[in-house]
Length: 179
Image 1 (cartoon, rainbow, N blue to C red):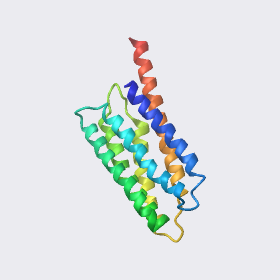
Image 2: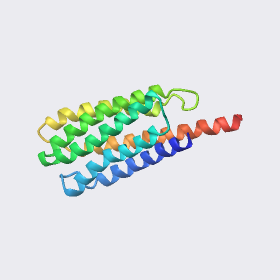
Image 3: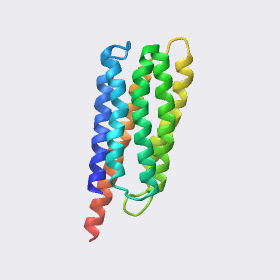
């Protein structure tokens, strides 16, 4: 569990830092904005691979491997759709947010147990990812889609990962005190 705690903590802090950096470039699809857009799902690829190592042979691991492939595909798709404009990028990000949110929610449900707890921050983050992704789809098709919608999504996701790390640390400390 300590390495899972580190994965959640680092993943959360990186997402918050990404949101802060991305907030400076959301006006257009500049080269910097596109690089950041492609980087975000790649961060998820690395985190999902590290997370999957913690669950060998479990159904949660299979979902983490699925999420790894999904996020790699999302990175590629975001890079390609950047050519078509902000609406296409926002739509692609929305589809990815919905599918990865369902996977995250499902992993959190399957990990319910005495060592990892109820995974409430991950359950909430997964559900909010689905909701956010669903709001991106009509926004992407609207008159003036905006990349700024992604800032709150990524920052909030980062906060939920940090909260999950804090929850795991608290559980670990409680077990150590009891022992």
